[in-house]
Length: 114
Image 1 (cartoon, rainbow, N blue to C red):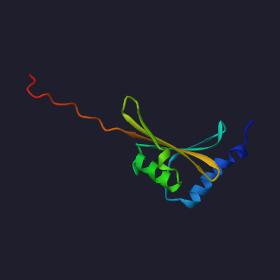
Image 2 (cartoon, rainbow, N blue to C red):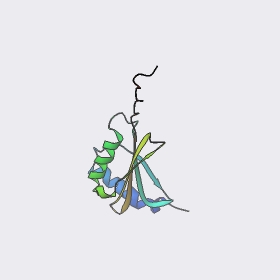
Image 3 (tube, rainbow, N blue to C red):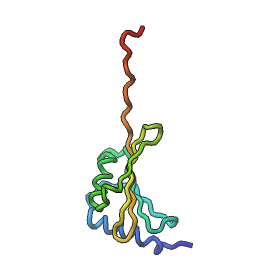
Image 4 (cartoon, rainbow, N blue to C red):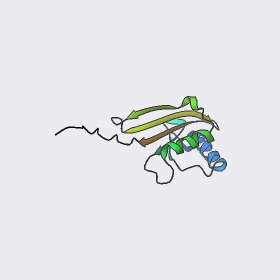
């Protein structure tokens, strides 16, 4: 059985992030005993304060996660843009994930159509 002590690396990293960067936008947080060294932070486009991709970038820069680790792709039939990055902070692996809605492309207007 896992204990809270088994999660000390990501919880310590979170505590230090809160102390060092209290003005960062609030993410969704995930710490679990399945990946005891990982702190997963996710950002979703439904945020009404900071767009998710901007929040992702602010966090990435603040934590010193190299931009070369950022991977971007689409999901949900191209309706959602996803950014992912991974780095180390205070002895924990920090994973950042952002989800943003892709604006719909208007259908082309056919000229001369009846």
